[in-house]
Length: 426
Length: 211
Picture: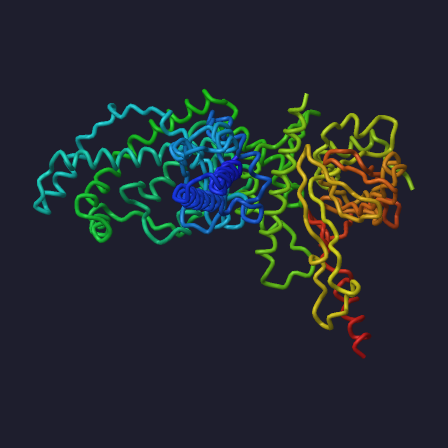
């Protein structure tokens, strides 16, 4: 669809050039048309740049279909595409070109049709660094899809007492000889709203992918730099990781118990991110944040931490209601984790990818969430059990095994999707 | 040498013990791919193809570059063909394809992959390296050649070949428990061969050539 828009723009520019070539048209008008066609061509070129990272060499084509199922299952109707690129952060970009397309003079029919075929805004999900070259890292895409539906997750924060935030902020600013004002209140609301949106997105990622999301999130935090992750747009990384872990430890059975039971390894918050910096005490954090932000922002961020922790359970609960209302089986629960690990973890060590589940004579395709979780469990707990292929030099076994695991998981995604597509043909 | 009936094949597909289990996955339509009374399982054309590019080498010479191993990947161009799309194999064209099914053989089974006769009658040869050893795990690579005079349009999902399974016994006549560990193609999902000779053979031949 995106390429259709580009083609439509090119056709529009061609139309201008055809008009300019008409001998009956005045030179000044022809010149204007040529200039306009150049501008349209520039737009077409810039549209192409948006596609950077979408080719099969960057993002595994096998995973796009299953991602689209997540998108459809969450009720996201926007046209969407996925890319992997060497950028710093995961990102959900909302691209709305309706104004541009509508204001183009004499738009070609192909451009009009292409724009009409899109459900705007166009969404683009970016996964950085080709997801570290490993399929399980793609679990974090659940977070970006969470951003796409964050406005549907309505959280009533009135039940959480916010007076402590104001008191803490007032006291901290007073030490800087700053009197609290309405401006600080507005800034606090703004930062809180951003943090709540991040927690909503984390909640969706956790619901869609279970522990796989925790592992991918932790790995991303760890690899994205040595800071605490806290700022006006994001709550602290360590807190986010802990909140996801707490959600996975809720209920009976829960993901934490099941992971321990099936892998023999304790699932802890830091299992895949042991080097993530823990948050320092509030006063020390404040001093550090003042190096990056102004005094007020630093004070607000520090004051908001306990409040954000308190509202997180509400956010996770509301997010779950939204996902269950959209498609109940999209919630990746502990029972499914048990089934997936029981069925697939040992076979994975024998080079059998988690393609389908065979139970009581009935066979059904493995889910993307199941494949991602089996993949992480394999990576984190079974690498010693996976034989290295012949001829691998000593010391290179680990990367070779990881590459093999990645290939097998990709094959699982491809073939489980094939089975799903086949079953849909009736 | 006994061949497994489709009933025996199904039993092995459902074996609880992973070391005994035969994996042919996904079987999109098990009933029609492993028909009762037969002794084989049909397999389908997958999505990945490799077209052999006209070689830049005079010949494919494993030792033509002295000590530098021949990179076989330069001989092929990859094509992904999704469900609903097709690829045409022209008369006398050669290409590599994969089975849609992922296969893993337990230590006491080996298999032969054989083209289906319907395709054979149209001129399509499906496999030349037909033996599959115990312990093999991976997507099967099919070597397709159109020996007919008419182009053939191939669609992923078409049943193009069948697998026959045979028991492998040890010297005492018991089911074998030893599979070829760490073989070149264990767990392979890629069609492109990595080497022509095993390292020892290559080393000795290289020495003989240089002497």
